[in-house]
Amino acid sequence: MDDKEIIDLFNERSEQAISESEKKYGKYCYSIAYRIVENEDDAKEIVNDTYLKAWNTIPPKNPDSLCGYFGMIARSTAIDKLRYNISEKRTSSRVDLAIDELSECIPKADTSDIVDSMALGNAISMFLSSLSERNRNIFIRRYWYVDSISEISDNLSISENAVKSILHRTRNTLKKYLEKEGVEI
Image 1 (cartoon, rainbow, N blue to C red):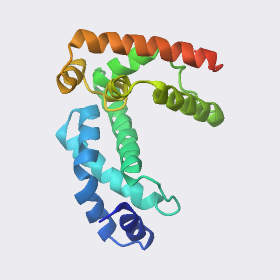
Image 2: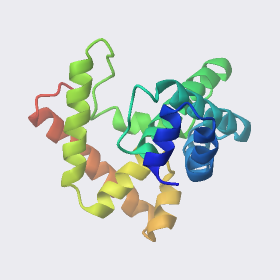
Image 3: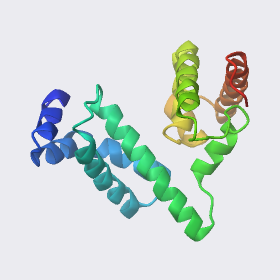
């Protein structure tokens, strides 16, 4: 079933929308959630929460990319769950490491100014589109999917040092790009 048909099921409030979403995007959402929370039960709960959030937001939203929409919801929900778990246990995770790496080139989030947040998002998107496919892939694998350096290295058949070097150079270039665009770091 294609995305338009699934969205039509959501709009019709048919419970089949959930089962079709599970068939098509269940593993994808689980993969995103598990990489962030690193706990099977939490990841399953996050996937279920993802479908509930989609159910509650479609309509009125009509996403162009259902895959991207589910991915965004799963990632956001997983990060919220991770924050909750960390506050309870006072531990760090691979997400903390990735965020720490980016902290030098991206300003701290201030949700009070949505316009600035949107401008930052657009600037980062423009920056990413200027990268080579390999460097963009490495950057996204590290900071969106929260892959470890060794996972990226294995996946792309390059050394861990090469991955670290590419990420370091890309972060420095991103920082310069954002400063040029007038984003205060």
